[in-house]
Length: 386
Image (tube, rainbow, N blue to C red; front, top):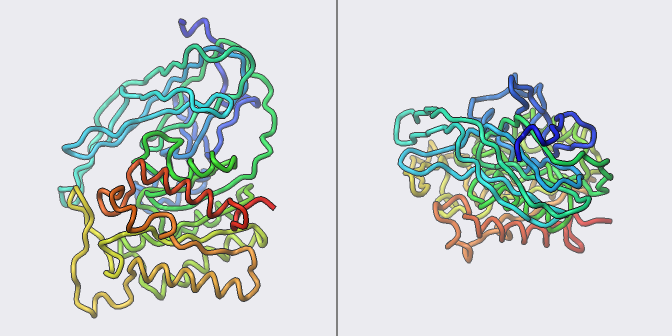
């Protein structure tokens, strides 16, 4: 159907909701969803953090309509590692809660990363906008939820329907904010609804805000303040692996930083359930300190003299420290602070689904989400409904 026969939807239409984004940054041609508030742009510690924040992992466009056709015009900027194909840029459409269509954007820009260069080199290949069409939708009024790609930045340029928007009914769902690393960001998932937080949110019917930032979970104060001020009912924090990867903290600073991060949230949310989750299995760094290195196929660590490794974090040590921090704070009166061992989500039995030694593959991420849903949201779990 020609675009001029469809109804354009304004991004600020009150019947339209873009969930999981704190900032809809205006662009010359549309908007760019960002997963942190606008004020954080001045505090980005490095460009990679800004790029991860602008990748809409967990972000959904939600509306109600009787339309049979939906079109969305986007300009994506995907990722490609030198010598490998571009990572798929995938959109998942749910109709009344069921996954109905999965489409891919292929025409946009590409960031090419060469990790073999020192320092790593970056280049941008040009591209064009894409119009993605969802035809033959079911008749009658229905709820649509379009999950945006987790593996690319996406400028939203236009949204068009062949029927008007209908008033949206309140979902009544609890709002869950999750903070984590690339494992939570979920670029290895087959689709944006299959990151492990996405899987857990769909199983438990909660409203997800995903703050999983690839390589960028470093206990940044701006993230703690975002969580402090956010309108959420539940919070989980999957901490530690990026600090190990970059050797960016030693034990002394790590302990104080976790306390400070939790204190910031508790300043405004003294009773909100918070679940602290430690790293999943990382074979190379279980009992060996970081930093971790990547040879393009797997991660590895190098030996250092004891004097240089003193106080450096290992995966096992991070789990012990996080457990101790939570137990001490709970004993001091924080009854809504809880701990989960990451090995309950992904352990040695799951190694076939850990191809690079750090990131679970698509099957591993789904399994993590299912396990988290059962352990955290199930009966007696720390995030279970009252």
